Image 1 (cartoon, rainbow, N blue to C red):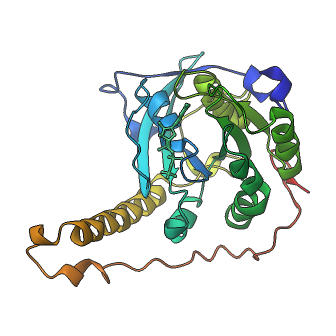
Image 2 (image 1 turned 90 degrees about the horizontal axis):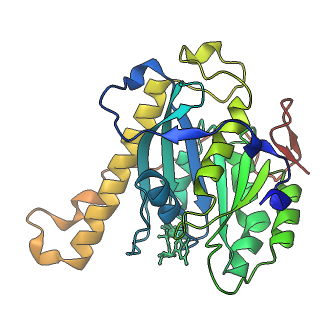
Length: 281
Ligand SMILES: Nc1nc2c(ncn2[C@@H]2O[C@H](COP(=O)(O)OP(=O)(O)OP(=O)(O)O)[C@@H](O)[C@H]2O)c(=O)[nH]1
């Protein structure tokens, strides 16, 4: 695994996912936001499921938007609230996905080791989108489905891509075999915390620039959930019109997805962050 890292960030702390969340009070912590993006079908949802739930899902259902909350404990017993944002790889949901980038602490940029196009799309599609919408957010490139018998992607080509897009790490992993899954998420936390104490407290006291207000995140999540619900309901209307009692058109205009205006231009430009987390050339 080490050979595929551009920087040895995963050598920092390890974080244990907590099963029993009954005694945890999330308001004490600012959530740590991890967003995953990548081609449709490359394995993003399965990765999150295998990390949070500990099993590999057998059904495939294209994601529109999903949000999961988890709690992890560092080796020094500090608890971190983690929000995992699963996005749609499908072009149809591009506008929703773009809203997910806001205030991300880390972006996992995923490709599948059994789909060459999914790697080609990293510099063509995904990296420019991330740079556009969250230019200062560290990127971790994740090569999913590392269990497949035949790789369509040379891991060393992927390593080059990782360096070219300024990813802080490249992690090949398998949700199916639970290979490197925990290491990938440890890497996410270590990008920000490496060696630093995880302390609950006011987001404004943070200096990394990657912590934002809890309430703002909650309102983004609520609005994305309602958009997603609207889409799901409209899809059901299309698929099963006989079960709809009210006007079938009622969900068509019940939300408006606006392109976020974060004040960045649309070009794929060189972005350097002082912390050295994200350097794009
Ligand atoms: N062999 C293998 N197959 C996997 C792995 N992870 C996911 N898959 C399969 O890949 C397909 C797509 O997986 P998803 O996790 O739904 O993919 P996704 O990237 O979330 O797809 P979208 O929601 O369309 O963006 C499913 O049939 C999974 O069973 C893995 O680690 N190994």
